[in-house]
Length: 147
Image 1 (cartoon, one colour):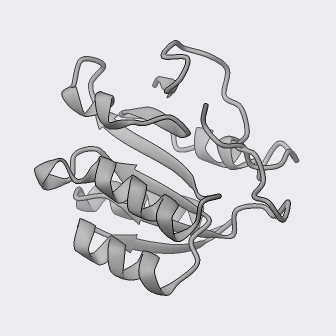
Image 2 (cartoon, rainbow, N blue to C red; image 1 turned 60 degrees about the vertical axis):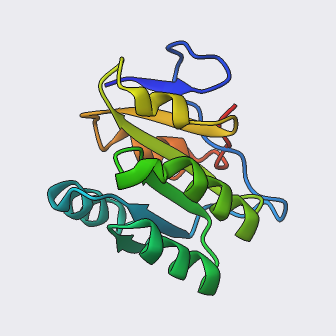
């Protein structure tokens, strides 16, 4: 499992993401993942801390983002057509304080490059237990944005 804050592009300890402007913790989480088993695993594990919405496409994700406040997005770089970068930008357009975690397959996989500044990049497969720490729910810290 590797977690790469994009700006540093190196392995570093997991840090909690910063709170939004209002100092609130992540409450609403959108998972955008084409793989059914990973969607199920993520939602089942994370629903104990968050209100979770799960979709498998960019179109469905945009519908959620346009109609609901989303505090964080777990976004697969494996979306068809390279839609991950555009969807991360759309999420930030809807909520500038949104926390984005981009998941990708393999250290040399080209989707790693879609993780822009302010986004955590998480290599698949990864340990689900790292996610609550990133969002600050287990450590008692405030959520923190990627670098």
